[in-house]
Length: 354
Ligand code: IPM
Ligand code: MN
Image (cartoon, rainbow, N blue to C red; front, side, top):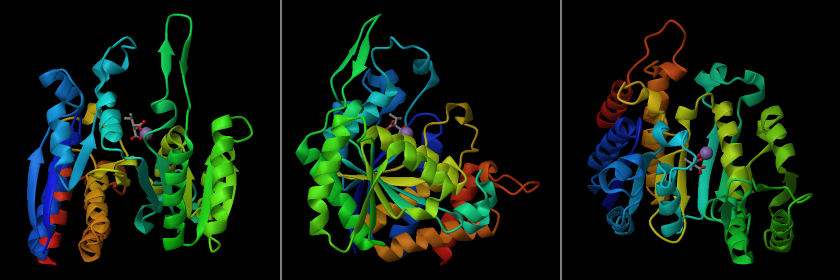
C-alpha cells in the first residue's frame, strides 16, 4: 500500500476537462490496488494570471514542492499569443515550474498504436513498430539563457554548462541501458559551440557505457530520419529547444497530439503531463482527447515502481481504442466521436471491473 499526495494543476483551455479524467483514473487505480491518494488543487497559467496576477504563484509552488507528484494539464490562452509586449504570459508559469522544481529531464515516449496507424500522416509501413523515447533537457539552453529585446535587436542565449550536460546525458545512457542500448545524441555541432560541448562530453561518457551503441546526429538530419525511418531510434537525448521541436514532430508518428504523455523529473517533485497544449478553441466543448493525460498517470505510477498499476491503465487505454470509444481526433470515419468525459469514464469503468 502506498500513499500518494498529488498536486493537480489543470491550467487553461482543455486543461480542466482532461485533468478531471486523469484524476478519476488515478483514483480508480488507487482504489483497485489499495493505495491512498490525496489531491491538492492549485492554479497556474492564464487562469492564475487572471486570479492572482502570476502564472506560477508561490502558493502553487509550495503545493507542488510538498506533493509526491504533480499531475499537470496545459497552459496557454490566445489573448496573450498575439500580444508580443505582454509582460506576463501563461507559458512563463510552466517554465517557472520546471525551473523551480529543477525538472531537468523531460521523458517523452513516442509510440504507435496498431489500430491508429492510419491516423499518422506517414505511411503505416513506415511507422508500424516505431517506439522510442526522446529525452529533452528542460531547464537550460535558449529557454532560460540571457535574453534581450528592443525594437531593433533581440537575442536568446543558448548556454549550457558541463554539469547540466552531464546529468542529462547520464539519464540518456541509463535509459538506453534499460531499453535496446542504442543512444542517439542529437545536436548541431557543425554550427553551435554549445552543441560541440554536448558532443565532447557525450564522447567522454560513452566508454563508461560500453554496451550502449552511441551515435551522434545533427538535428536537421534527425528531423528527417524521424519521419523517414522512425524505427531507427531507441533513445534520443537532446537540448531543450531541439527536444521541443522534435517531440511535436514525434506526435505525428503516433497519429495525434492527444496521445503522448510525458514525465519531467529532476531535483524535486516530478511532473506528469501531456505534451500537447491547451487547445483553447476546444475549451469547454468536452471534445479533447484525454488519453495523453491518462497515459501521464500511467507514467506516474511507473515512476513510483507501480508497474502493474501502469500496465492496467495502458490495457484500459488499448481496450478503449479497440472498442472504438475514441474522441473525434482519432475516431474511425463514420463512427461516433465520443466526448472527453465518455472516453475517460469508459476507462475508469474498465479499471474498476478489471
Ligand atoms: C512543451 C510546450 C512548452 C515548451 C511551451 C508551452 C512553453 O510547447 O511542453 O513542449 O515550449 O516547452
Ligand atoms: Mn512543445
